[in-house]
Figure 1 (cartoon, rainbow, N blue to C red):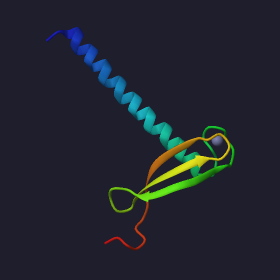
Figure 2 (cartoon, rainbow, N blue to C red; figure 1 turned 90 degrees about the horizontal axis):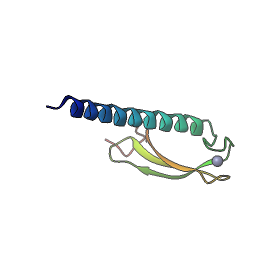
Figure 3 (cartoon, rainbow, N blue to C red; figure 1 turned 30 degrees about the vertical axis):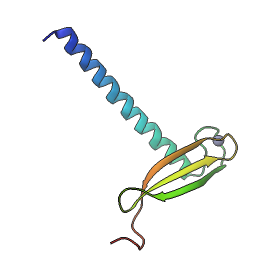
Length: 87
Ligand SMILES: [Zn+2]
């Protein structure tokens, strides 16, 4: 096994994992901002929930938020406690 190829693969792997973790953190930060009622992009309190649908499993909802000022839109998987309709 070529040590340089191995090192290259390792760097690519670490790189993609880092990007993925960063993406999740940023998404989580966006959700925190939105839950306080602010748009993560333009920082105005103009964020509105435009869509909410049940996700794959019980208690998980796919919620879409949109900013009325700058047009920012994003969807989040939100875990919610079951309120009827679930076993
Ligand atoms: Zn905005």
